[in-house]
Length: 538
Image 1 (cartoon, rainbow, N blue to C red):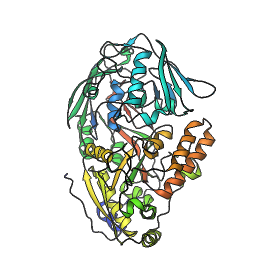
Image 2: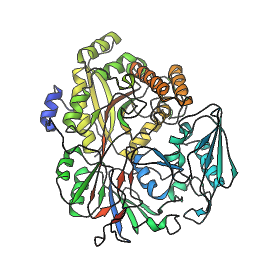
Image 3: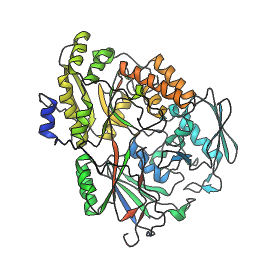
Image 4: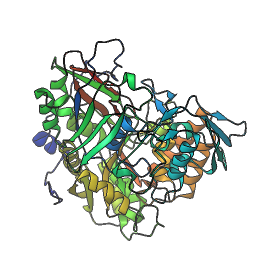
């Protein structure tokens, strides 16, 4: 689809939904249950086989330091292990580390024990110094997306072959959780340069072979992997298939064996297919509309004023939030599969509270009152850039009708997903709809997006109050205290609204019953590293 704008002249949300979205209001959802997948275990599986996954969007560069795409995490999970990982229960477990960190009494020194006696895919020995090199790159590379996730680090040293020590300016409670994601991915120090993302080399069940832009990424089994005896597939091909209907059709035909981000329009039928298994996991993340309030020269550059009422007047942004009928949108556009979201703090985590779960009322009259008070013309025009996938366009068109009731004229501009990632970094947008897959620690959902000058502060928002709250929340390990502070963060957010949260999806992944060992947790990553064809099925 081109990037032409969409103007849908529909008088009410109900009219949009009746016209283009089947109205479904089931009173019960018996198939709505968590299923994270199961390891191969003792089931008889084949040794070998080439698995194909239908990938809903193209990843950005395969560089854990600079990447900001969920889909890159899918691929990297098979080729680039981390110091820590999550298990199905959301607990942090060692991966390339051999145990959880030891933290000094003052919280300023974090000691991480790491594996020895293993190698990267290129034969380079893995040790504490290799870990130090990767962590320093994550921390210091100018275009790094990881630095803000790692906290106020003073130094990183390898004290011997099996221990890395991180020293902090002040305590930073989220560090272990950060190292269970891309900040914990360890790259081979041999040839580690700016072109790493074109030929990534790490420790993992598979190793990178080829990327055909906009088509596929192929990885093959790595015989050097330390747990190679539990790797069963010969290769995995991640085939780019942005159309949800095509992914579903290819699953049924057997052309692919796994597909991510299944559309709520398809999932009920797929659940009834006896040859398929639908994995379901709640999300730690969110979908949102980001308002550009100061990102003029690109993320990370000093903010500059944007002379529009939307950017300068919080009343206009608050009006937009009140104009969104979140519950009706998710119930109808997504057939009740998703949930409204009003905050970056996932409600199922121990850091959630009544304050962080609070949601602005859908109140079109209040929206119009705020716009009138702000002295802007009604309808107030906003240009919203969105990903050009079917479900997102359906949501955007329904959102367009919802906010029209509140006095807004929304112009929708569809953009390719990979291009949209660049748009938000470059600041070339007025408003933009994108999501975040979420992290187990709320710092990963907040600081990098809301802290002044942070690498993913795409809105260009800056608030001393917000910065103070985020810093205090990251310093303490007391869960109740952190929950209270994140409640205050949400209060500031819902007054200023640089990011307006809309809904929280469920991670819906489908695989054929010819394979086993596919797992998807609340972090949204589809894990294929230990998957296998059932015996006699490859």
